[in-house]
Image 1: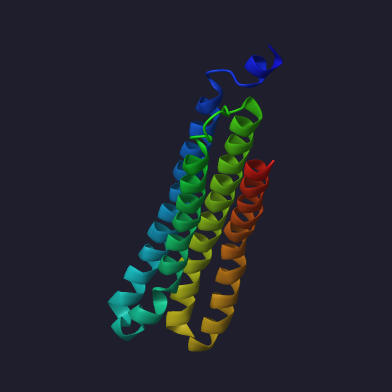
Image 2: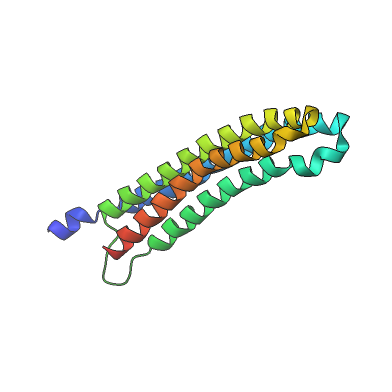
Length: 163
């Protein structure tokens, strides 16, 4: 009877919630970073079209945030079908929910940081070219927020599957 209590039929709902939260929040962060940086790039393109290619770095970095969310969503989805003879436990469902929330929310924070820095960074770069290295460094620190969420949750999913 204890096995039935630990593997209720609604447990996969929480795993699917983890997939949804990872994709929704991660892609919202990537979209915000792309949109906010794109506004700055459009402003730069009006006055200095020669700087547009180097100004695309924040947009590329925002797209990577969505890739982190996608990878975690695929990993969670791969664990949704347990091996034959085993059931999808409530613990696994909550673990996948927590993983999806963690990756999604860190992606949202990273996308917001990249958007704000990217917008002002490319506008400042238009006025002073020496700001480029500093802008890229700050963008990297913003990107690392999403990377930390991805790395920790990737290892949590692997530990959940092994145990």
